[in-house]
Amino acid sequence: MSEQDLWVVVPAYDEAAGLPRTLDALAAQTDQDFTLVVVDNGSTDGTADVARAWARTVPLVVHVLEEPEKGVGCAVDTGFRTAIAAGATHLARTDADCVPRPDWVAEVRAGFAEGAELVCGHLVARRDENGPLARAAFRGMVVAAATFGRWRAANRGQDYLVPYQMHAGNNMAVTAALYERCGGMPRMPSPTDRTFLNRVRRCTDRVQQRRTMVSENSMRRIEAYGVVGAARWYLDRGPGRLTPDPR
Image 1: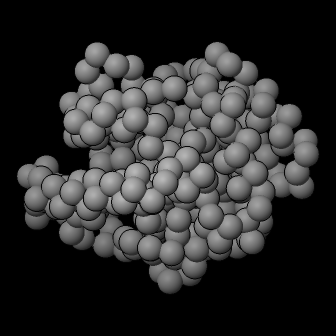
Image 2 (image 1 turned 135 degrees about the horizontal axis):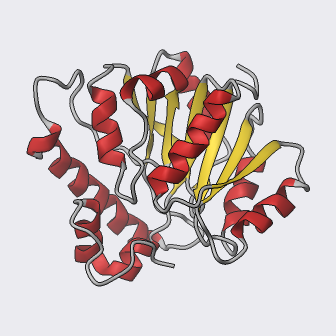
C-alpha cells in the first residue's frame, strides 16, 4: 500500500488556530506513506490558507479542498470521494481538533492488514488540554454512550451483520470499496457517525475495534454544552440554543 492507496482526510471548519497541531501530529507519524487531504468546510478564519501554508513546509503530499456545503458529513464525503477518484483504496479520517498519536497511521494499516473493512479507533481525551480527572470523566461518558448505543432500538435488528459497537468518525478508517458499497457518509451536519456505522453494518461483518489506534479527542463540545447538552447532541437531539460548532 503506497501513499496513492491510503489517504487521510481531515475536515475543518474555522480551525485556523488549532489545525497546525493536528497537522504536525500527522507529519510526525512513524508511517508517512499516505496522502493527506484537508477539507475546508466554508471557514471564515482563513483555515484553508493555514493548511496551504503548512503544506509547503512538509514532504507529505497534501491537498487542500474547499467544500462550501455546510456539515461535517459533506466535508468528509467530498474528501473521501476525491481520494477514491484519485485512486485511493483505503481511507482514514481524523478531525481538525484531534491529535493522532505517532503510530496512528501504522495502526490503521495494521487493521486493514488483518482483514478489516472498517477500523474503529479507541476514544480518549486530548492530554495537552485536559488533566487526569477530565480524561477519566471523558472515559466514563464514552462507556455510558457505548452501553446506551448497544441497547438503542435503532441500532438493533436482523439486517445488521455485526453487533453495534460505538465508533467515532474522527478516529476511523474504511476501505474505498466498502465506502462506496454502503453509500458513504451522509451529507449532513453532525452527528453522522452512527448513521454511517449502521450503513456499514448492513454491508459487512468485517468491523474491527482497535484500542491501539488512538487519535486524541477534543473535549470542547462538552465544555461548551455541558454534559447534558453534549449528550443531547450525540443522541441526535440537536444543539438546543447553542450552535452546532462550539468554537
